Length: 192
Ligand code: G4P
Image 1 (tube, protein in one colour):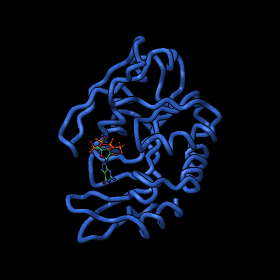
Image 2: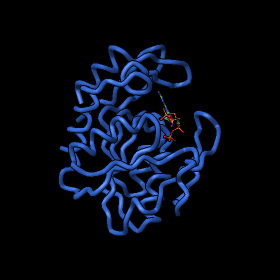
Image 3: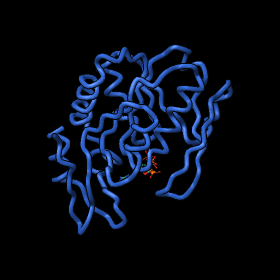
Image 4: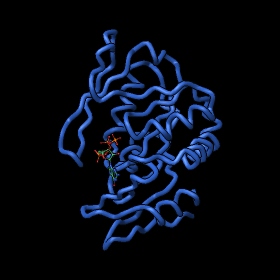
């Protein structure tokens, strides 16, 4: 997605250890016009998948998730990382390990929001090792629903997440794919 690529080139900051800082439009300040285009692009790519719900994880997945859900005209669910005070009903819980932060988080979704047979599109801001997306997919499958696809805003293709998700049989659509973050520069995967 050219618009997003240009935004990464103009505003992304490469930090050490292969991390891209994009807090001017995705991870802190958010660009609603760009997010609207992200939602439209995922909707175009997953048009044939009969999506009934979008599922993401708080917090940075919520902006691309809600714009995608709006375009698809379905609800958005965001998995919580901390147990909600009001989340007293039955919940699905999955453990997600963050390599970046070296901690495991329990992520939760209330059972009443995913019905058996639903077609759930998973959306997230970054794909690195794939732990978050795999945890979300396990929740969908626990519910007896199916994963309609996985939409990623920024894929770090030099980390194993995309291959792990594809090997597990999921359709992954990433709007920009980063080949390397080295010497302060972003290189993109050449699209065929
Ligand atoms: P994984 O889910 O693909 O395995 O990712 P990993 O554990 O490595 O990443 C944990 C957190 O760090 C996630 O956000 C992920 O989106 C984010 N992340 C990973 N690589 C980058 C990067 O290069 N740049 C930025 N900006 N973020 C990255 P999170 O902790 O859940 O944060 P948030 O959604 O609450 O903002």
